[in-house]
Image (cartoon, rainbow, N blue to C red; front, side):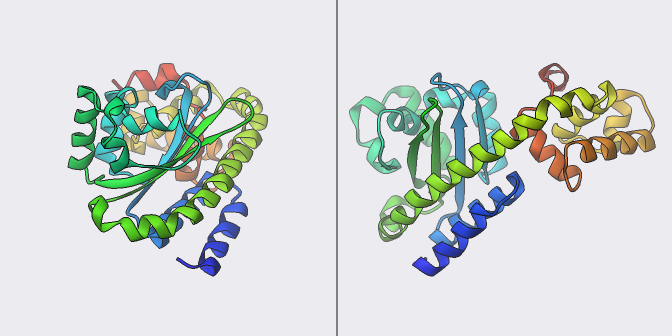
Length: 255
């Protein structure tokens, strides 16, 4: 990556008007920087829990699912290290520190490697309001193979991380302003269909679960897409999932 390439990606990020655009900018940046994966997670409170966080990433789905279901945030040595620092953290350097070598943290690293996350670095970010965020770039390659890429990409990643945090906060703020009106304008049935759509259910599956016809499901989907200001169903699901517009009670039923 050179300065000109980075400038183009920064402009794309700053011009992103929604979470889809932000994800696209992140994917492009990680690819051009020489990495296979990216992750950006924002913790809304000083308490580092998944319940109080939102994230965007392109990690393997199997890893993301395991991370969420097993609450691996509690065992994540990189997060434990980053919340005590203001500078970037190489994952292999964290492994060499005694304070981050508890049994559950060693097991965490083994699990991550099994899912292809063999090396990477993370950049901690702090907002005046107390929000903590972390941008991570990861590779399937071993750390010893990534030394030059780490050294070359870190300056760009630091700059990109700050603009990314700003872009996400701006989008959160915009959506928060419309969240109340959107939620109040969604009917119970629209909320229900949206919740199941966020769980990955197809139109046919939603119809069977809710007990209505497929055409009726499509009708409700079209309505919540319009009310959320989304361009299509996928866009609406992305916005609802990222910004917490889905009612937990409905999602919980999927378990």
